[in-house]
Image 1 (tube, one colour):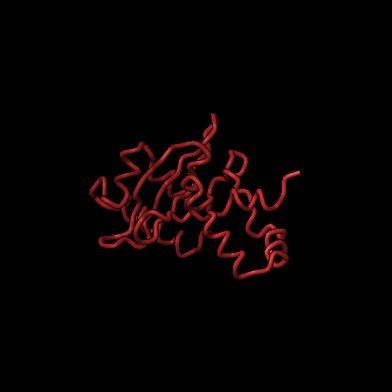
Image 2 (cartoon, rainbow, N blue to C red):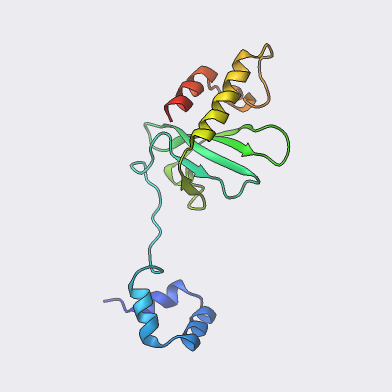
Length: 162
């Protein structure tokens, strides 16, 4: 049987552990860590966890960028489409298309899953409809989708189903 102290020394750095022992009694620490609020194993995403339409807030991007699962691959993994809602400058638009394994969908564990709001859907629909109605073919807001072989009409129908 693995002792609680062995688990904690692996998870917490030694200086943090010594500071905690100075501030709290052993019984208080034991009760706190037995609730498993801190001693939870992080699980990686698998293909079964991913659903088309899942949204993850990109924690490394500046502004408010969200990665959406566009489609699942039969061999495993998924295609994601990134949309920047609040860029530092310029208009909001599609920023990237990515294909990768299931673990990469949430930024290898860094990104948080969020709910897709009606405001997000309206912004994406407006961007796509403006680009489709435009007399210029490749507007910069949707240029990433076109360069990656995605049809704007297919992406528009996918956004409406979110």
